[in-house]
Length: 299
Image 1 (cartoon, one colour):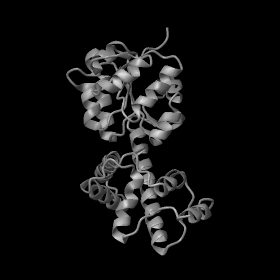
Image 2: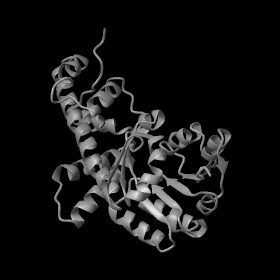
Image 3: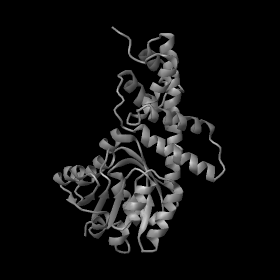
Image 4: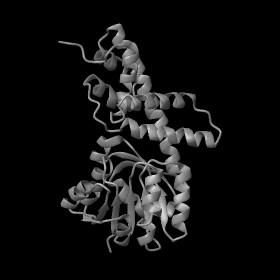
């Protein structure tokens, strides 16, 4: 019998991810607080549900991708949550970016009902969600991971079991440090070069093949040069992730001076009305300090 799949959270990431599962022939039951998003996915072949509980009643495996720890708790543990409708043996795969502490807490509550859980946050933003090439970092039992691995490969090109429950979310926090500090370092460099008056595009071509080259550089420099700050990874979402980084780091006694500085930059950008920009919009913070704009040379 084919597995019945549930999908909760049909936002900037969840919608394209759910569509990959539909394209390969899975029957999905979907829910989101945004009815328009539900209608869109239902029109492409999914069955709409009115609550997470209803999704659970129709599903053997349930994917969740919602903004933060509190949302995941509400979806799983709430009055109309998954655990109210799930049978023992149901598997929850939480694709959200939350804290390891929250992942462990939710998994423990699920286990009391005989429900299994994996924490499986994703990296790659909207573009990789659309083309199905996300990196997925998974925490949980090896046998549960094996049972859903093929489904995860429908949405990601890199799917890795990192360790026990909470390991996926910890790997995602590490990922977010590296990605966002890379973007900040890139922004400082671009603003310095722009202020000096050199051709940024030529500088980018000159350095991208060396040690400074990175996936971040190739993804974000063209966006900055095109003044394209439409979010694939929003500043406010990355602010939330870095707040989770700092909370987790402080709990286990790890000082993170660079991450804490960048968190404050994100707060400054949010206060400046720029929370909805892509995180390469960090460059605008530095541009304002230096009174310069990073853009392509005329002609």
